[in-house]
Length: 168
Length: 120
Image (cartoon, rainbow over all chains, first blue to last red; front, side, top):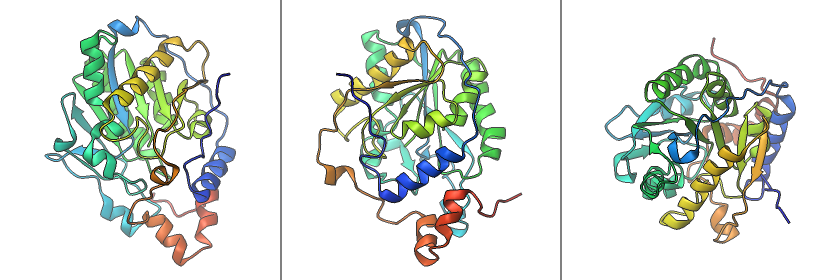
């Protein structure tokens, strides 16, 4: 029999209460739909992680700002090249245990696994650029107004056919 | 994340999310969701488990290719391979908002209801 995923099996009771309260508060949305234009084996694929992952050479996500004002989260985003590995990045999310991803980036952002699927011909290509932002955003207005359009422009310029978004 | 996904989709790029709390992702209008029963912080699986990570990634992408209906949720069949105790690890430093709530328990209601101070 097909399973139904229990969203709260591994969460704390507090996280479950918060998630369920937010779900009840969410207004109804129109669900957009863009059909896939080609088979997976021809698609350029981009990954997006909400894990607040940045290249070590790039600007860190602003953890101090959130420590000063716990209702605030850094609304910016970062670009990571398709060849990035754990040695190249730092993980700045303050709400999850990031130690696993610090050892192995593929726990949150499986760039090496996407290259595996590219070699196997299961996907067409891993896009040149992939993306991360900091997912604790109680007020997402600036993120939606600035970071999301920038990611969309970048994906379009690189001919992305399918984006995989991964909340942490 | 669901709002970002809906924005990208609406801009003409097909999207899928690999989601732990899939009800939350769905409530924001995400068009395609692959749900997985894995711990927070490790949606693709354990560090070093390359075969497992590959299988989850492939399943999420194939769920995108198979989806027919806006808002569709594909429940992936993967079982977390390690112990429950291992899966329930929290960050060593509690998140700032949880530290605030520990000092001022009434703040939890603000988190639940969204009635916290916003920067203009």
